[in-house]
Length: 182
Image (cartoon, rainbow, N blue to C red; front, side, top):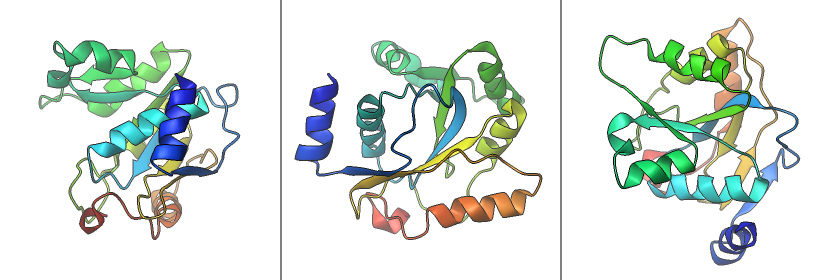
């Protein structure tokens, strides 16, 4: 199936992978991976192709309502974990616990929290990485240049403002599928 993913990604869609292309399963077994800009449902499929090509097992969380038959089986098979989003729950701690419970876990999130345009990122991914004591790996969903640019693992400091400035700089000029939402 990897050859098919490569054919679709590189030949049919014309995409490329840049940056940390030597990222391997042996180097970072646990991380929070942030994907931006998240402007379309098509981002999910680009991510699935990228994951198959790079042979990096990644995970995601989704609202538990997505994990019902018939889609639930598929979402779990591709690394999904259902999340109860009812109020009154500490979602950061619940997700950070997933890192504790698993030998290998790379959680992919979209910091915008939606496919619409936002002025500020949500901060949950940051606090999840802090609570789980794992690095953040950034990758772009750059539809303008048809590329996924992957960062080196970024280890958080005690300065949230500096950390966010560095992460936001990584995404400067990146345009999503729907440019008006980028």
